[in-house]
Length: 190
Image 1 (cartoon, rainbow, N blue to C red):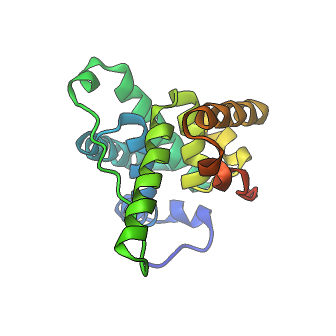
Image 2: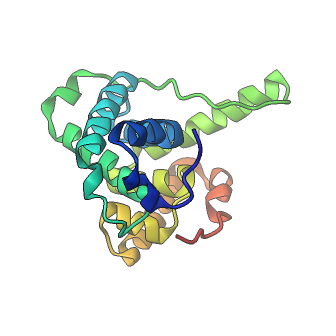
């Protein structure tokens, strides 16, 4: 499917075309966001389905006050938080089969990188949700601080404070060597 030049073209398409576009363009990113909240692959898929229904029924309410991606992330975050408020999530244990790929490296290098990545991912997933969601949006979704602020409906200064505090918590768990990548991430404009 072609990429639409302008986000306001989205509203000119049929709801079915919009859902196809959302799945192809943002599906994996949205699923990763949901997973960081619920920590369960099966529940992630269920919530993703609920997310698609919400987008389908409310797409005409998108006003363009933020980017379409930011609007979608807000819906996914809200759906995830709704799920966490219910008691059913307690019955599904955490499934820690998070995988990363390294092409062109030896099996030993990939194993070491996978182990290090798993340590970082586990540490991020162990953070309180108010820090975790900021790390996921910033470093795995490449959101700017402003986009995170809009998505989470927080002041930008609050986002920066939570980022700083979350980094300190990760530093205590992991040490400095794992956090170098977080320190060198460039600020992305909206």
